[in-house]
Image (cartoon, rainbow, N blue to C red; front, side, top):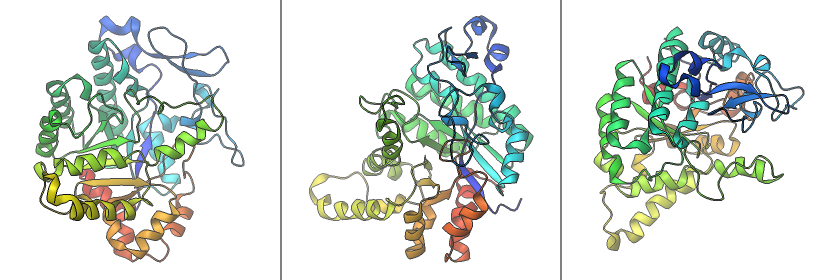
Amino acid sequence: MDYRVISADNHIIDPRDLYVERLPARYRDRAPRVVTAPEGGEGWSWEGRAPSRTFGLEAVAGQANDGDFRASGLTWDEILPGNYDGAEHLKDMDRDGIDAAVVYPSAAMATYVLPDRDFALAVLQTYNDWLLGDFCGVAPDRLVGLCPLPVDDGAAATVAELERCAAKGARGFFLPGAPATPYWDRSYDELWRAACDADVALSFHRNHGGRPPAGEEFDQATPGINVGGIVVRFFAAVAPLTYMIYTGVFERFPSLRIVAAEVNCGWLPFWRQTLDQLYEKEGHWSALPFSTQPSTALGRNVFVTALDDWVGFTSIRDDPTLADTVMYSIDYPHSVSLWPNSRSYVERLTSGMGPDVREKVLAGNAVRVYRLG
């Protein structure tokens, strides 16, 4: 297939009856399901509790009216079917000029904080089977579903789920943005090795999934904190990627591919400069566990997705080497989504770029990272 534009960061919502119908029978009375909240909108209920929030910001595609949309209070019938149906998702991508999409999970991320770990794994596996078989199954060459991995349940369970899903055709996997153990810890080496052996990419999305540290929770109620938190999360990749590079993860696993989604790329030039400056200035005393400049990981092991980052795309025009690290994305169907205006955004964002650089950012890097084509 000829890939011209790929969105490396889309989202989907689990079908409302998925777990009621497909969880193992012993869990179906506890199955997460979509119910009506007291205020009238609908949202996910876990263990019979009222939804913590109703649909809104995560499903605004098709809802906006002159730039205004409802932050919550949507019902299931108001959400575009492209949120949960693979064929409909592709129709929405066709409307936007998108040839393929990488899709991140939604409700399934709640499994990272469930106390009953057997139940959580059953939910996660039910989602992964639906994602690969139903949603992506309509066009595996156009839809890359990221299967969540149970990283907080130990290496054996995590590697087993990776191998199970890779055997079903998974090209990439989702890691929680707030794991119980940071990703530079050696306990992940079995996972990194398994990902390299299976030739699959691993992706995290800002700090989504798991239990964020105190003060980093998504506070939707406090004016200012709600949108301020969105701004802050564009910088969520700096710490985990820096520590992974500096603790030698990519020295030990040179073919490992890690994607940080929805973090944009305007910060990359300063970060790359700082990585290498500190390596040169402090390396003589610090016993660093790697032997090459830290920046060599960019575009080889480390990748980011970017939306309408005008600063970042200007940086790529000024320094085309940055293009190796960046993948275009539209964040369908979330509140910052570029859908359905990608043609206009792409034209303006890539204006002045050479054709090779443009191709890397719009499609080539995603093809390479997720083994498309």
